[in-house]
Length: 349
Image (cartoon, rainbow, N blue to C red; front, side, top):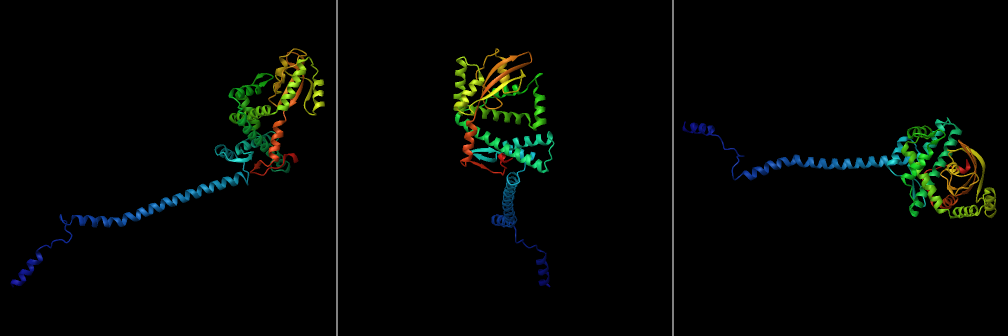
């Protein structure tokens, strides 16, 4: 009986837990808990590391894809949409290289899109017809040649330290806004440019700045034209005012050295590169000093024949600038021009 009672009492006494935390077992217990958490921590770290690598790979693949797509649209496909034009304005990719100078794709597109805009909006050509495609090929070739010439002028201007100031540009633009009824407002003139050529005011100013820079470079490098101009001035200073006779003398020495312009009546504010403006300041029979034309490069000597309140009559000698175009052609023929898109030969059109 005593044995049975002892067993019952032994069952009622609680056993001391095996995992009881004491001062002696605290460090062991902490390590056991941390070890249990590590199996959750390390897999998350591994997954995050792999996620970062995958994100980098995907991003790099996307960048390469868009670069390849942009290259295809610009070069093999020659896409000239407004979107691609804006892209080339931001990313300075080349359409050609002339003597080490990059020809920006945006400059080419600005010229080509303007010419195409005029053909479509004003000439109403069908771009899908054979004649329409031929005309677009022609203006494409012209746009490329113009962009190449501008880029080469930039290269020479940098070497010669030639720039076009903002005041020179604004003076030229102001002259362009002159009409028979006075000066046209900037907003009206900008609207006309947008309507005919599809250029914003900033694009038009960029195009005119390039044009003026090329002219300044042409004057600076053409020493032959400068010498002939001085020869004309010498003859005029000695009392010779027969411009036709002076022209014949120059051409006898060097064919094509000068061109004679027969007398003609024009408005006083005629858009002729400043010739009418120079003639209006003269007395009848007087010959001007050299006038640097802003329309077609060269030196002009103008003689006033007659005038009235609204018109003037004058004749002139023109000493053309040829050095720039000749030098550019030599550079192209020497293999220093690389085009990255295919364009038809404008001389064959």
